[in-house]
Length: 429
Image (tube, rainbow, N blue to C red; front, top):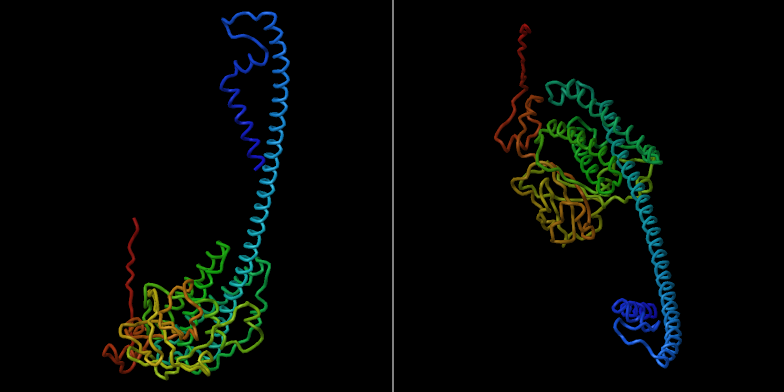
C-alpha cells in the first residue's frame, strides 16, 4: 500500500509540472511573464525573498520528490526482485515437474517394453513347444489338405515372435533397463496342446490378446519413437491373428475395428500359462485383474447361455452381478444379468467378456472404463457364425461346425482344390 501511495504522489507532481512548465519555472526564479511591469525595489526585495522561499520550497519539494521516487524505485526494485524470484522459482518448479514427468514416462516406457517382452516370450515358447509336438503329418491328420504348408506357416509366425522379443530386449537396454526378470519366466501349455485343434484355438486367443496388449500399452508410452515401433509390431500381430482366424474356420476380418485391453487385463489372460521362474507382478508392478473363465463345454453361438467360473467369482454371490460383452466397433458393452447372459443374434468374431456389479454398460474404451465396477474378466470368446470360404481352401471339411450348421452346409470327405496359373512368355521389343 505504501508503494502505491508514493507512486501516485510522484505521478501527480509530474502531471502538474507537465501541465504548466513555464509558470512553475517563473514562480521559482521570479521572472515575469512577457509584457508584465518591471519589478520595483520593494517588489524586487519581495521577489528575492520569494526566490529564497520558493527556492527553499523547491529544494524541499525536490528532495521530497526524490525521496518519494527513491522509495518508489526501491519498492519497484523489490517487487521486480520478488517477481524474479517467483519466476525463477516457478521455472525451477516447472523444470522439476518436467524432469519428474520425464522420469515417469521413461519408467512407464520400460514397463510397457517388459510387458510386451513377456507376451512375446509366451507366444514364442508356445509355438516352439507346439511345433516340437505336432509335425506336418499331425496337421494333415487334423484335416488340413497341406499339413506341411500349415506347419511352415506356424514356423513363420514363431520366427516373427522371436524377432519381436529380441528387438524388445534391445529396446529395454537402450532405456537403461533389462527384460531379464520376465525373460526368466517358464510356461506350461499342457492343457492347450492336447491336440492340433486345441492348439490352434489357443493360438488364436493369444494372437488376439497380443493385439489388445499392444494397443492398450500405448496409453502408457511417452516416447513417440517407441510408440511407432509398437505400432509396427501390432500390425504384424494382426496378420498373425488373421491367419489363426482362418485356420480356426472363423472370419478372417470379423470387424472394422479391433478391441483393446489394459495391461492388467492382458495379464489376467496370460498369467495361467506362467508356471514359475519369475514374478510378473513384481517385475511389472502390475496386478492382473481377477480371472474369469467360460465354463460352457461347447463353442458359443447365438442363443448360447454363457456360464462362468474362475478365481474372480470364487465365493461370490452372483445375484446382482452382470455380464458384459464387448465387440469390435462398439462404444460400450452389451450388459445383461449374469443369469441371462445369452449370446445375441448377429454377433460374429471375438468378444471380450467381463463381470461387473453394475447394470450400467461399460465403455469399450479402456481410458473411460470405471474400474470400480469390475468383478472379474476378461474372458475371450469367438462367436463364429459365418463360414469362411477361405478355410475350404485349406481343409477337406469345415473345421467350424457351428458356421457350417448355420449356413446349411456340411463336409463329406476331403476335397482337393487345385489352383493353376498360366504364364505366357512374350518377346520384349
